[in-house]
Length: 168
Image (cartoon, rainbow, N blue to C red; front, side, top):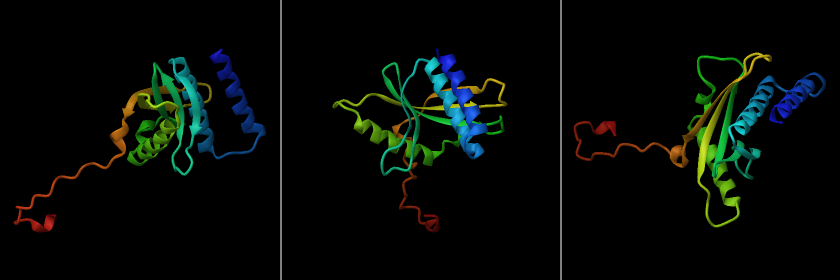
C-alpha cells in the first residue's frame, strides 16, 4: 500500500511540474525530499503525526513529527538534488537546531497530559540523483538533543594572569 501511495505521489508531483504553477527548483527538490523521507520513515515503523509544523510567533519549522516505539521524534529533512562534497545533514547548524528546539518545545507544551513524552531529534539526509534512480536516504537517530542549541560555555576568566591582561 505504501508503494502505491508513493507512486501516486510521484505522479502528482511530476504532473504539477508540467501543468501547475511553476515553483522555484529548490522548493520542488525540498518537497520531493520530504516526500521520500516520509515514506522511508513509514517503512522504518514511524507513525507520522504532523508534517511541516509551525508554531505561532516562531521562526522555525519541523519537517516531520512522528512516534517511534513510544518516543516522540522531531525529524529535520535535508535534501540535495545531486551528490556533492558536503552531505545534506551538514546544513543543520546551531541556528537551525535552536529553531527546531524552539518549535519542539511549543509542540510538546500543546500535548495533553501532565507527563511529557520522551523526545528525540532525528535528521534524514536525502540525495535524490536523477529522476529514474532511487534516492539515497540516511537516517540519523538522536542527531542532537535538547541541550544542543545552547551557546558553548566560555573558559572561566583567571584573574591572577596579570602578564597577559590584554587577552581578556
